[in-house]
Length: 458
Image (cartoon, rainbow, N blue to C red; front, side, top):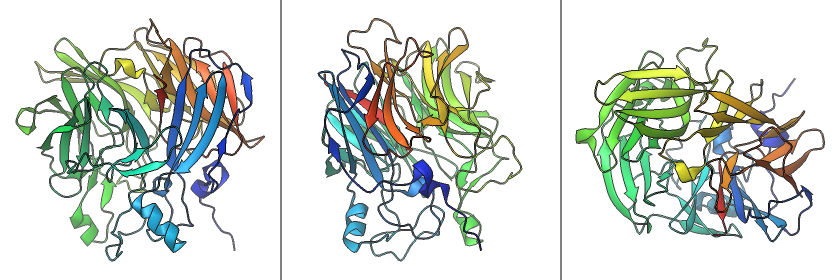
């Protein structure tokens, strides 16, 4: 007999169980003198052996943080202590199954566990750990202790996307929550001081998995893509969530303080988008840049299983003409790439540069480098991690008093499969093809994960 290993419970996807705090880490190279703050990355890290089939999205959230100050680096990692984590911790075993198993409608603690495992945002002086199926969790810096669920004094009435958008000019934060029951989409705005000031429903034909969205200076862009949820399918014994290749993709553009009465929908070819790079206004056009794939089998459901382009993301640009109603869609690069980021001081504005993880030619989501895109000149450069070395999302940390958009550093964790060691890699964003400026050696393995953020001491 042979047993098939779940790759997301093995290799460098395997969880680490020990929470540690260390000081004065060894640095190869030199930490930038004016880089002062904390890099934190979120990701799935199951506390206990899972029930049934395990999907990478299922694991409990664990934060890995490196603080840089006074020329030294320290590291700590902590579980996000959600209610579900606490209940399972006391039970000494997993009590919830995951996305690949039927919902546990008879679970006395609820059918769904908010894992808080996906992303992070810093807004109004508070770090939040995010999972789109539930409320954010407030996190204390720099020790990464969990404060608790964050519901904006009870004003949070929907889920909370893993990818809220903070306008660098106004300080407002836009977010949405999607649901598989009406209202399928709710759109909210948080004031610069951290109060929900507005929540409005947006009508959709049916429930969809909507992972990300985008903002410009005056508009918000939603993506009604054909990864749909159907209760009727479930009742027939079919998957509730499925990519339907015959359905078009729809992009809804609404004024920031608009609602369902003035949203405009644009139809394009079927696709799926997990992550947007940015969006901006160009006279009468709204421009969106994102990583597009023809279809997705992320939850092992696709009505076109022979699609060879499924799950292969590439950078695309859409132009939505508000005067004519026409849409232009074009591929910007044929190299598979995901986890796109920009200098977020320019979010919602036209930028020259974007960054993304270059995907390795493997069935697993491994990144072997960082691509820097010059969107003005339609060129790119790549920072190579090296043979047998794989990293994650590269987060942009601006230089203090920067005068140029790319004046700063790209920061990510990298794992060396030969030495089996993890490190924090800091790359000069203005010279990405060069060797890292600094490599901070981490005293324990950092599993591959999802999204991170940089919080400066300022």
